[in-house]
Image (cartoon, rainbow, N blue to C red; front, side):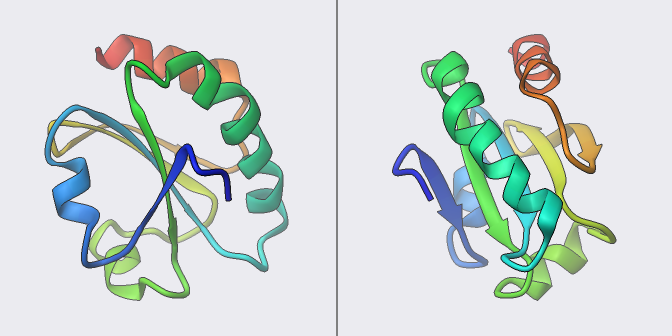
Length: 107
């Protein structure tokens, strides 16, 4: 995972999403579409929004309580938080332009 993408766990999740804009990708290492989503986030989204939002990932296998709390039923699921509240949700593989647009709208 790129250094510019935060790795969230149950211990740092709430603190990280509490303020500002945070895009969180719920994923698992065995998930094919998740493997395709990561380079989109790393190579396209981060470069466009690094000064406006933080990009993070949550491994659902390692953080089952977080996945349950946010009713993650399929992956990848991407939640966009603004000051701790969900403002947009995506399910399945997402294009960079859709994610960047959602971040810009949330600002």
